[in-house]
Image 1 (cartoon, rainbow, N blue to C red):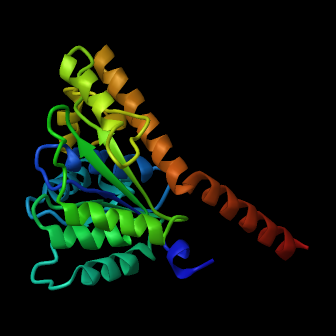
Image 2 (image 1 turned 30 degrees about the vertical axis):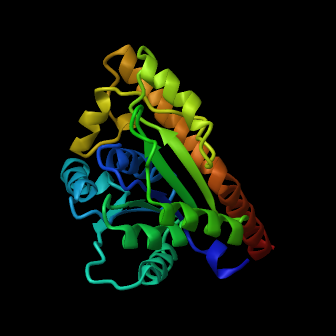
Length: 251
């Protein structure tokens, strides 16, 4: 196994536009994955939304919190490779690193993309025709070509409202873009605002049909991420190897 595949997987939420839900998605994915894996939530956005959520989570859950989190804004960097090399070093200590990227710092975003195993680009209905600069698109294509075995990029329709025509049109238009689309889409639901208080959607009580639908969508998104990254199969393989080792020791 090469050095890259031996390290933890890096999932990055990237979009140079603000207001598309990167932070909410990042904290929910990180919190849910932390129930099964060693997970770090890394906030590289100066706004610090994910960092604030992490502090609220520690205060709320205390000892039961299994998710690590901290912020690193990479101020003063001159090359994207500084970010990518640092991220690969950080990932060596975890099963998964979930990165919330800044909207306007392209250098940081480029470094994150170069290190990532999965780049998820959240897009909202009516706001995705120019989701990134040409240089970011080109880097995604280059990384995908250079690392076809351990890199994937996906578009994710977020804040969808199936009752509105614009959401239906968005679903069709996404299929015309040059990056594959996640099978799961996320609805525009109030419970996601509540998840900014230190808990994930799956940890909050479901008080309505909309809440239950949000939980279903998030569960499906997590399963899809696990499948893309091969996390479930890797964990099964580790268990098998540990069992074999234990059997040999006992013999």
